[in-house]
Length: 72
Image: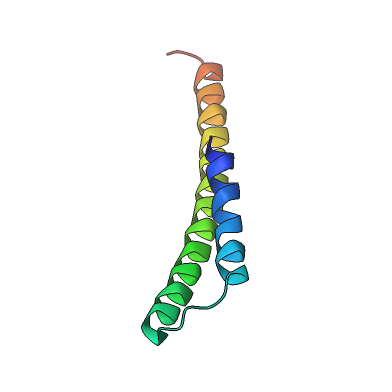
């Protein structure tokens, strides 16, 4: 599910850019900002996914180390 949303978000700026640009300059600027923000959100989502993976690995390692410690 996450990957489908991410893939759709990746293609949104390309689809918007392929359409004819709006005649209204304000709308044109709004679309440009939207595309920039969408790109930033995609980058942040990718970073979050990497950090979540690292967090899961560290939690697993921590649990393993706790299990290996001798009880006093």
